[in-house]
Image 1 (tube, rainbow, N blue to C red):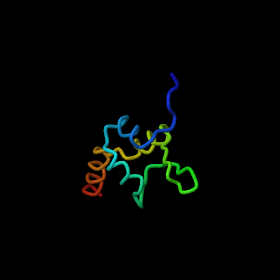
Image 2: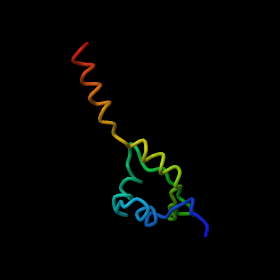
Image 3: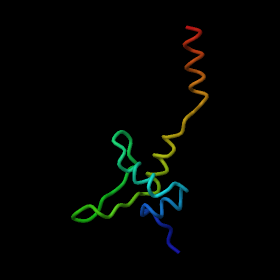
Image 4: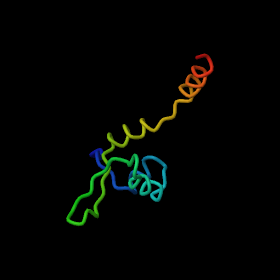
Length: 77
């Protein structure tokens, strides 16, 4: 069996547990869209590279401790 490197949106939804609708919205996000490829003359075929999505997802992580550190830094300056 060949492991997929590029996902359809529906496959990415299955991989992540995020709905197709939400993923489509994230693909179109004007500030920080999910990296993806549009293929074909009309660009109707969309594929998302697993490693690029995983990296994008990692960048979305909110680190609570950094928020606390920022607040404490402001208090003690």
